[in-house]
Image 1 (cartoon, rainbow, N blue to C red):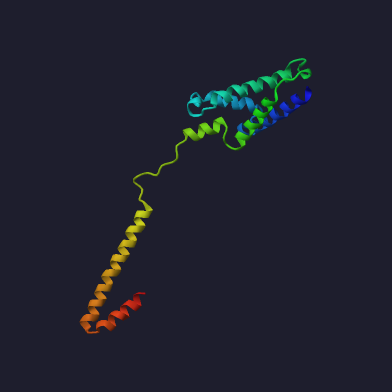
Image 2: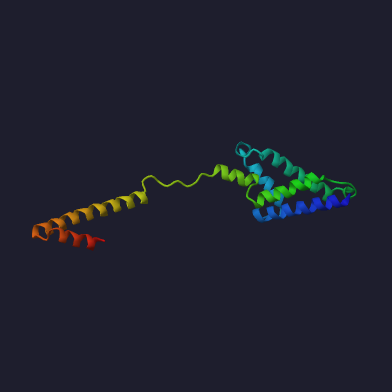
Length: 164
C-alpha cells in the first residue's frame, strides 16, 4: 500500500519543484494553479485547459490530504494513473507543451515588419538592374568610339575581353 503513495509523493514533489523554479516561489503547484485561474479564456485557446486545471487541483488535494490528515499512510491515496498523469504533466512543462505554454503560443502574435520599411530584396534587385543597365550603356559608348576611330571588329574584341 505505501509504495504507491511514495511514488505519488515523489512525482508530485518533482512537479512542485519544477513549478517553484518557473514561478520563483515555494508554492509550486499552487502557483501554477493560480496562474491558470488568472487566465479567464484559457479553455478558448487550449482544448485541455479545463481538464488539466481540474486534475492539478485534484492532485494537490490528494497530496494535502496525505500530508495533513491522520491515518492516510495506511491506505492508498492514489492510483497508478494519477502518478502517470503527474509524470506526463512534468514532461509537458519541460517540453513547453503545458496549458500555460500553449496559451501563450496561441495568444502571442509574431512581430510584424512595418510596411513603411524598405524591402531589402527589392532594393538589391533594383541595384543589380541599374548596374546592368549602366554597363550596357558604357559598352555601347565604347563600341561606338572604337567604330568611329576605325578600330572595327578588333576593337570590339578588345572591349569584350576587358569586360570579362
